[in-house]
Image 1 (cartoon, helix red, strand yellow):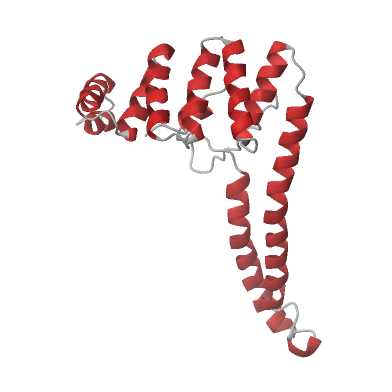
Image 2: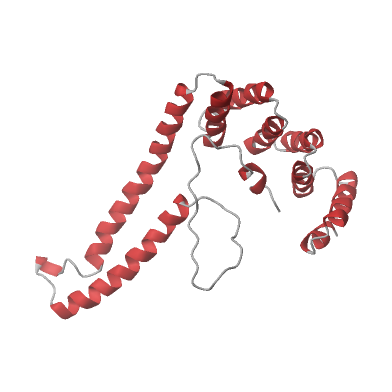
Length: 221
């Protein structure tokens, strides 16, 4: 029932039925995360913390619940508590990029040293991008041969073949670039409907502006 009212944008009834569902079955992560996000959107962060901590008890190895708890303290402007929790998460999950990004941002805000976190974040980002770029490079080489640029026996293809191959290569390379663009594009909410020919370019995220609603958006049902 809660999901039905949620789809109808009746948040009051949706909240009522999700809360009733939680009382009868307090281990449903879908219900728990919905309630936690609802309280965050309502700026009732103490109540949200209760649900995210409950989710963390059910899924102790899932770091996102602990990150959500920490984000609630951050939104309450309890930056010292948030910093302690981020440092604890980082100690247990040293390669979690989201935690590192928030550590860099919160250390900047508190005037604390952040160079070590920034260097590690840059190193991890570079390390994760390198295998993807190498794989795309190898794929492009194979696609070049398949596309007709390089013919059997090393002879140059005829102009007609080159035209057909170039067209196929262009289409295949365009398809090959789509996953790369998808990985690089930040997740964002759909833009409002505009003209048919309008285009929307995602705005780059500022290095020191990591305190947006991305953590909440990731959990929205």
